Image 1: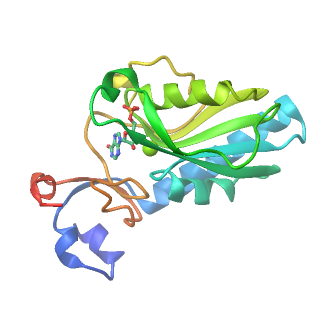
Image 2: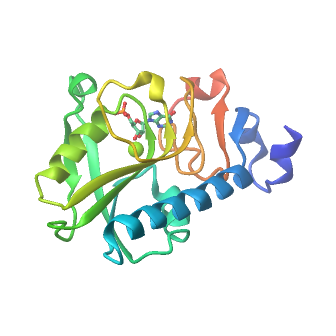
Length: 198
Ligand code: IMP
Ligand code: MG
């Protein structure tokens, strides 16, 4: 835990619930910079100076997005969508309710969907379908974390930060019940953390 605590000046109690740091702040930082370079190169090669229309699904990806766009040396715009999963049934279908739609048109645009983590891919599969109906020129996917093993929906992920195994992770924007998003690293939590009341 020494490595973790050295970075922190906050609530020690919460940090006792951290099980293992999977990606440190530095590791994430360098990978995000690389991804930004890959994205800029890809769009330059395929679409010249035409701008990238970045779409982020709130909320988990907001920290990743903030770092990522500063590493993309290419013209771009950013827009957001918010969704809420249906209480039941949505796990299998990926059908979710849009609670906030894009504020500008993506017709004819080159859309890059930025996600924090893809698990089954059902949620994103549905979103890509909804975006596709808005008539963009292209849609690509960029995710920080990819749990490829759990994939159900067939999603073409062009830009991927890290592949991870089945464990649940928090930090760097990712939450468990809306908490832990502010950790600068990505980690797993001890069992006790999941047992805490909301
Ligand atoms: P999917 O539809 O199964 O791909 O679910 C993906 C969504 O589930 C992500 O956008 C996250 O909001 C959430 N999620 C999946 N795994 C984790 C995790 O390990 N930590 C936090 N959120 C997760
Ligand atoms: Mg998400």
